[in-house]
Amino acid sequence: MPKIKLCFAQTNPVRESPEKNLKTAFLLAEEAADAGSDMIIFPEQSATGWNPASQEYLSDENGFIPESFRKAAAENNIAVLGSFREISNDKPKNTAVFYDNCGNLLAKYSKIHLFNPGGENKCFSCGNKPSAFTYMGVKFGLAICYDLRFSEIFTYYAKEGCECVIVQASWPDARMKHWNLFIHSRAVENQYYVAGVNPTGLTDVEIYSGGSVLASPFGDTVMQAGDKPGLFYAEIDTSLVYEARKSLHSLSDRRDDLYIGWHRK
Image (cartoon, rainbow, N blue to C red):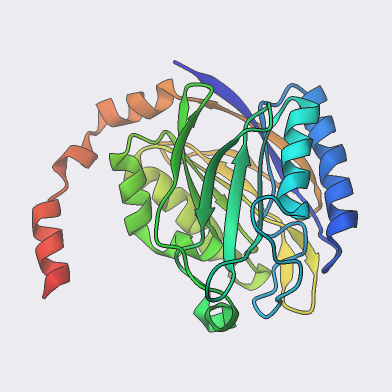
């Protein structure tokens, strides 16, 4: 069964300073590659810092921010998951981009559940499609921050055969108990790995305390970062996914025929 080494880039972004943040991101990608990592994951909107009211640095997928993530992947021979504020017809979207180690765009995902309590819906438009892809023989799904509170997208990824779902986040310190609860719950419910990466630092929006984490298909903590910036490493062994599903095949006991009917009432 395939194995893959992940690097969690727990950064402290400088607000609205993409050139500075992306220069750091390139160096971190280089360091992660030198350490033997196959993939580096950056937090939600790490190039600018998450700000639900900001309309700065908007671009399409060929813009400066996504292009910088692409170059970091291609020039360091490591897959990169970044994100940017994507131009759309109405309001911009909060979009994740995944590049393989040659700089090819393999997946793109726009945040489906906007954080309306923080006003994200006022300045951004939501995505409407999940995104699953395969890299190095491992099938991944993508989610962003607030998506964690909505189990349906994670159930979809289980049905699609995903072995790991990656959650890029800007999850505030005040709700870190929920962060850890949801990461582990989604892993146990769907019997796959869930990898969450989160920033650190104080901004004019929130206080962030890191806590990047990898939960196993059994709900165990494989890796848990502290509250300081840095690179944190963990390996995914997909054989554990099938071991979990064989030992307790709860996914096959779902009653989707009933659930769909309940939702329609």
